[in-house]
Length: 174
Image 1 (tube, rainbow, N blue to C red):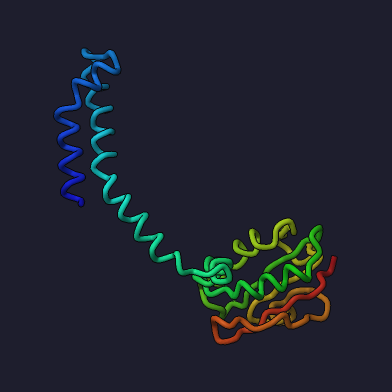
Image 2 (cartoon, helix red, strand yellow):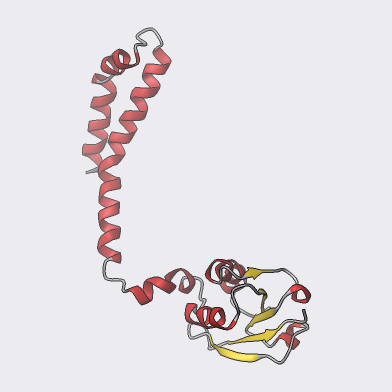
C-alpha cells in the first residue's frame, strides 16, 4: 500500500504538473506550479496509509463499550473516572473547587488530575488556592496531610487503578 501510494504520488508529480499549471493559469510561475503539484502528490502518496490507519483504529475501538469509553482518557493517566464522576455529583454546578494530589502519588496522576477534572467537572470552576474554593478535592491524602485548610473530609472512594489510594472531598474554607 505504501509503495502504491508513493508510486501514485510520483506519477501525479510528474504527469500532473501541466494540468496544475493550466488550472492555476500560471505556466510561467514555476515555483507555484511545483509547490501545488508537490502538495497534491504528497496527499495522494499518504492516502493509502491514512485510510489503512483509520480502518485499523475503527477495528480496535469498535468493541469499546460506552462505560469504558467514558473513562478511557482518565484511565490512561491512572485516574479513576468513576471517582471523578462521584465528586461531580457532590459539588453543585455553580461552586468552585481546588484539587491537590499527594506528593507520593504516581507522576501521571500528579500531572493530569487537575486538567482532567477541569474538563470532567464543568461547569464547576477550578481555582488554584484552597482559600478561594468552596470545595477541596484531595487525591491520595487527607487535606490536613497536605497542609490545606478545609472542613471535615469525606472519603469519596479509593482509586481502583492504583493501590486503592483514597480520594477525599471537603468543604473549602470559603
